[in-house]
Structure formats: structure tokens, C-alpha cells
Amino acid sequence: METKTVVTALAALAQDSRLAIFRALVQAGPAGLAAGRISELTGIAPSSLSFHLKELSHADMVSSQQAGRFVIYSANFATMNALLGFLTENCCGGNPCSPVCTPACEPEKSGATE
Amino acid sequence: METKTVVTALAALAQDSRLAIFRALVQAGPAGLAAGRISELTGIAPSSLSFHLKELSHADMVSSQQAGRFVIYSANFATMNALLGFLTENCCGGNPCSPVCTPACEPEKSGATE
DNA sequence: TCCATATTTCAATAATATTTGAAATGTTAA
DNA sequence: TTAACATTTCAAATATTATTGAAATATGGA
Image: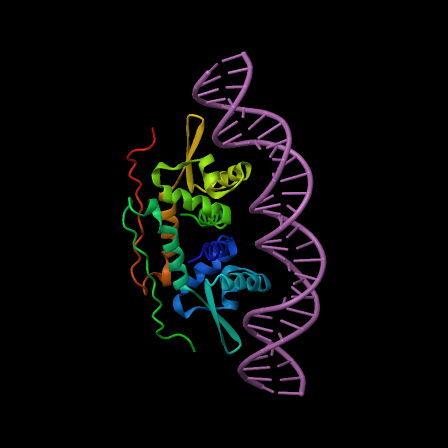
């Protein structure tokens, strides 16, 4: 993961509204949430929400898919894990501290998306 | 960890200069680095560096200690781990995905700081 | 086709963050 | 105590980001 990518990802999360959006999506799991539902849950106005979702999307922290007239957003677990990995790698020059275990959240792509 | 604290911590890292500073400190390990050394390593001008260090400090991502006429900064591993934990907790509503293991980097407080 | 719903785009405004250089503070050593 | 070094503070200029409301786009159903 490149430094620039990391900064973008961190910046995407480093904002009240966006962290709230992202957490809602993380909790929703792979099934995701419609934009309107996110707006309800977080109280963020649609146009503002759209702005923040684009930001998260651009940082590759969320993905979207059209479903009828709804747009379903979901958290990008792979990116999040890469981010966490980056922050913990290179720790203490590479050796001295405890072995780092990269946390994993594998979406099971099971049901949900119709 | 509170949401507000998390946003502050993420914002502290979500910036080129500060991420570079923090990484240098993470790699340096518990022994830390003097401000001037950080300036050399990163190419950030002293006054700007001071601004960013204060930002990181305020977010509790780094600590400092006076040592002679140097100020030694070091990464705050505990906060970083708490941050990573926060981001991975609540994942997928609490259950569905793989067990998360919080990465640990315990500074050994061994030598260095006289 | 026309209407209602869901979401995005746009432009303007407001709020925040970053960088710079000069000056101030504090520390050591001669 | 003075000189030299390390770091921080300050104020101003610049750049970046967030919020708003109105209008535009796209979809599904009557």
C-alpha cells in the first residue's frame, strides 16, 4: 500500500460524518445499506452524504452497486485490513516488538444482494 | 475509545507530513527520535514540524520528553493499538466475520532513555 | 407518458488546516 | 554571563474541506 493511498484512506475516515457512515456500513456487513438508509441512520443531509460517500468511495473504503432505484453501499473490508496492516508494519524497525497479526474480516459474499 | 478521540487520532495520521513523522517514530521504536532528527529525516521545516508534532501529541499518538537540550519524541503504541481495535470492533454487527485479533506492539522500555 | 422516489451535481459560502519566516524561549558549555 | 544550539510560538498568507439548498438525473410504477 502506498503512502499516498494510506493518507487518502485515513483522511476518508478522519471526519465525523464519514466515520459514522463507515461504521454504519461496517456494522451492516457485506450486505450494505442504501444511501437513503444511511442518511436516516446518521442524520446527514442527502447532498452532504453524497459528497462524503464519494470521498469514501474514492479512497476505496466503500463500494456501491445500483439495486433498482436504490444505491447500495458497503464497506470495503479488504482496504480496511490493508490499512491496518500498513500501520502496524515496519513497527520498531522490523523486529523488536510482538508479532503483529493482521486482523481479518472476510465478507462471506453469501446472500443479501438482490 | 470515543468516536471523537478516534477522529482526532485518524486526522492526526491523515496528513503527509504527520504520517511520515509517525512512521519514522514507529520505526525508531520506543527509544524515539529528537525533533531535529525528525526534521532531517523528513525534510520538514522546524516550525512546521513543531506544529505537526503538537497535533500528533494532542491526539495522543506521540509522547515527548526533554533530554538535555533535545526533545525526544516517541510513538504511542498503546493509542495506535486502541485505534486499530476500534476500527475492527463492531465489525459486521458483531458476529459474522472472522475473529479479530488486536495487534500488539508492546514497547519494552528497555534501554535508550537515560 | 407522467409522477413520485432516490440519489447526485453544482455553485456559493463558511470553516479549517498548512506553511512560512522571524522572533522568543530554554539549555548547555565555554 | 555570553554564545551557540534546539525547539517552539506567533501572525499572516494560502490552500483545502465541509455544508447548504436548488436543480438535474435516473428509476419504477400507475
